[in-house]
Length: 327
Ligand code: GLV
Image 1 (cartoon, protein in one colour):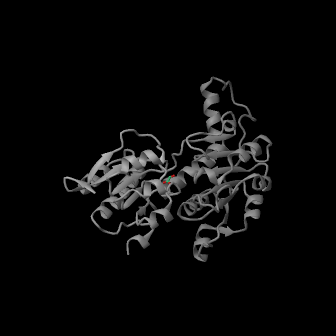
Image 2: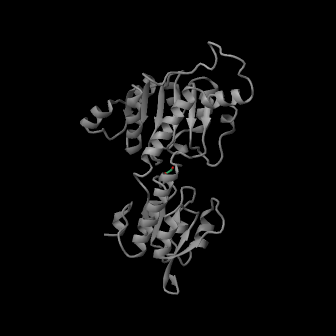
Image 3: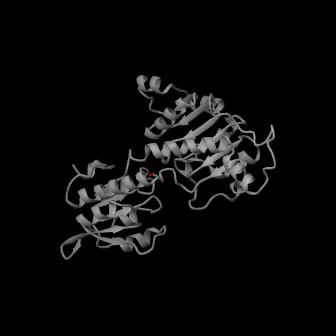
């Protein structure tokens, strides 16, 4: 598919330098005119005549889009790819790529930021101070929870979960993890992390931090029964994907004081946030920015552009999620 001999690719949303230059060297880039989440039918219309789509996590890329004639690759500028129906892509012989690795540290940093912010009530304290309510030191003012020495429960110890465990070591935390795939013994030892079942993790952790991809198996992994198993003093941290947590059940658990707080970067129906969370001072809310540092987002843009450029030139992109399409 081309105009004037050059293959065309659809850039759904702007990306950071050096991504645009890498794309422009490989193909004619058609930028989608509106930088906003779109429905499948609009993406399909825009993708007609394109060999590739550079998508982002809010773009639904499913059967309607993947059946576009001539489409060869979808390059997602994210590590998560639950917005793409990969089996459908495979059946249409469309390659799918993501951006793993480059955002692990920034995301682990941010999970820790949420741990600190919720435990030490930093958002609440900032707003208290700005409102002129600080009228003198008081021994019982804004008491929070200790992070050092506390128990951290990691649900999922892929690259990002391991990064959080690594940071927890510096805070002298006890680290438990739940993951169907055990870490190699030397990694467990190096991180000081012990594998436990979900029930024990929930029952013993002061902070429960989620680091799993969104799949059918992980949808609503944390819901009413799980919140009921957590300590009343526990804090939930989610930097993975919103639907891993049943948001209505979380609001109910927070209202019923079954758990003490939450630090959230992701939501079940982004960009909507459950209205019940908004007035809660014990909940820290961020707009899906865990990987949002200048260098990380630039790296993600470059990686996605390189994946696309390689495929456009007929090669096998480095971060191919469905290698069966390109043997
Ligand atoms: C961000 O959420 C990502 O998946 O990269």
